[in-house]
Amino acid sequence: MVKVTGLCAGYDNREVLHDVSLEFLPGRVTTIIGENGCGKSTLLKAIAGQIDISGGNVMIGDRDRTKMNIREVARTVAYLAQSKTTPDITVGRMVLHGRFPYLTYPRRYSKRDLEIAQEAMKIMGITELRDMTLSQLSGGMRQKVYIAMALAQQSPVILMDEPTTFLDITQQLLFTESARDLAKDNKTVIMVLHDLLLALKWSDEIVVMHEGKAIFNGTPEEVIASGTIEKVYGVVVKSVSEKDKVNYYYDY
Image (cartoon, rainbow, N blue to C red; front, side, top):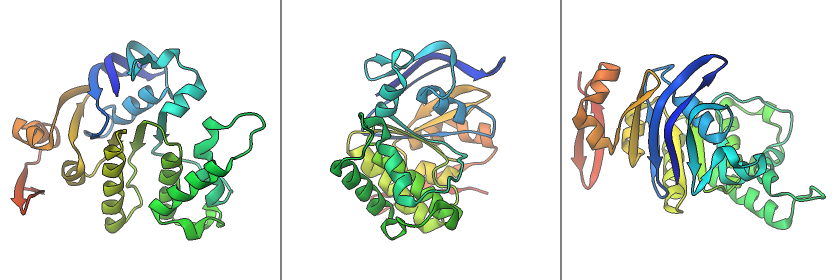
């Protein structure tokens, strides 16, 4: 579980998040939506310890994140950033980086580390790429490698900022299914997505951000019924139920 209370954070002297209070539960996929610059990515960075907080606190389980050291945070929170560098290393080695928080001296990967990395690559369908370098891959394939690295970290909390970037439609759907599988494994999964319909279809909980504040959170149906999406985006979203499934569409 992740709980933020009265959270304020930003960059240099500019506050981006203003008094944000939210609770993210294990076993659920929570997606943060909102217009550009509203604080979605900043919220993930504050939870992951990538930036300092200027007010409030972040609790991960029963621990204050600010009182955890770097290794403890890395073992607890896997953070997949939106913008990433492309190191000139192989896919297999990159995925193994997810096991780094668990290494002890001397820093050598165990058989179990290798098995976990192999399983993460299998889940993302990139096993055959393990000996290729990241620079040889397309943007979509590189994104799958970074996701596999996050999976290999095996943290109870997984934060992903725009994880479907560069993925085609088929791969987006496969990824969202994988995210739900992670939640079923009692992990706390928190994502930022720009694709509103994708977020509504695959999330258990939606958080709507606006001007640095969380202005509404609830199930997809509750968010739609509240009118918050129309207020923030200026569009109307409706839902239709078909054979125990709910699909969402824009009502032009």
